[in-house]
Amino acid sequence: MPHEAECPCEFCEIFRLRARIAELEEWKSSALDILNGINLQEVGKALSVGLGQPIGPAILPGIHSLRARVAELEVDTTRRLGSRVNVLEDALEEIAGCTPDNACTEMCAEIATEALKCS
Image (cartoon, rainbow, N blue to C red; front, top):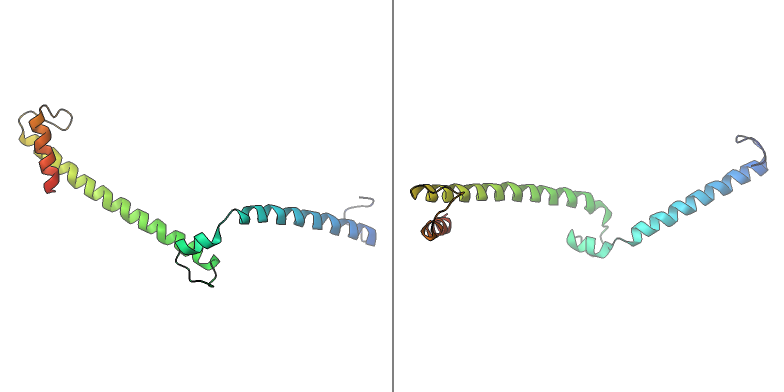
């Protein structure tokens, strides 16, 4: 640049504006590369956005909703698995000397399988 960064002359202003335009063109190119990698039609379908409706406003609420659903499923799965493990442990304890770590016979496995079917 020919003068100081804050020089008020028209030549320096043009130089600054051209530099800013180059920055913005680079940013636009980068942003378009990112946006072109997103299939907005599929995102809209996944979020049940109606045809012709804007997708952008539905994205963040959709993410929050999906995260909440995942958390619910994790809690439910943990609860269900925990109760099944308890049933299995109870069934194995009914067999003398058996624990979950050493189901000693085929009969232990059958009893445990039956107990799990009932839970």
